[in-house]
Length: 290
Ligand code: MG
Image (cartoon, rainbow, N blue to C red; front, side, top):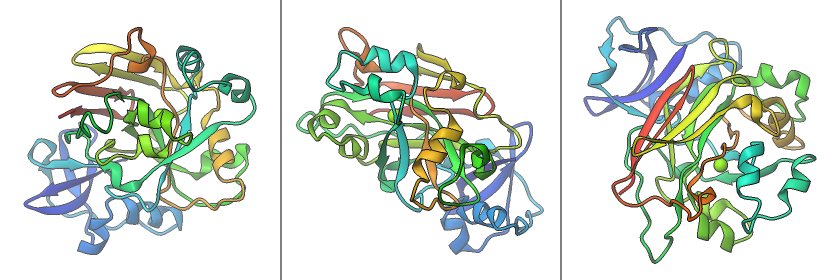
């Protein structure tokens, strides 16, 4: 299934995207449930309940405004840092030192605040030169947790995956470096475009897919998720150590080589730039930076 959250006639709805990607059929949800996007569906599946029924009508996807499938995640997104070998290498000369040695033992994990999430085609607001002049993009496969749990083992981890979506882990590099911890430079308003929908785990093997990113049409990132340093089961095992995961929790799995910071000189984003990210088996998101 592909589950999308969208606005039609001023009303937020959650729908099933047809196989051709052209039509969408809304689930019959209360306004309170619809306001949470796909969250109530994820909770239903996670607890073994049936999905709500579908409405009889369908509408063209092109006629609705797609939103992030989880427009306001229930809490901070978990995010893996430097989780692809080539990306760790491209930043090895940066201020983020000593991560390579650690990388083989423990993942770097930080969080992004839920309020940073915007839709798959929304604008990303540059915060202004007084706050940051080093805005960067990071295309990431993001795991949507289904059944929750604590101390989940690697072996059992994939059974906790509800599905996958795409995020752009937008980053203010100067702010990221300034504060030791990464959350501030990763959590500005609009710094987490997400979508275009959630693809359920029965339709996509997130451990074997391709992630690409273009800036103004120029291919910048192109990698396969097989090249992660810490694979998806390991990331789930790691973030659930002593911490209960809940349905709808999100784990961004880290980005590949080709971020703006990795170029010499760096290629940071400026107003008017358009960043497009595509993951095979999911689709694409595209955001203008303004
Ligand atoms: Mg990232």
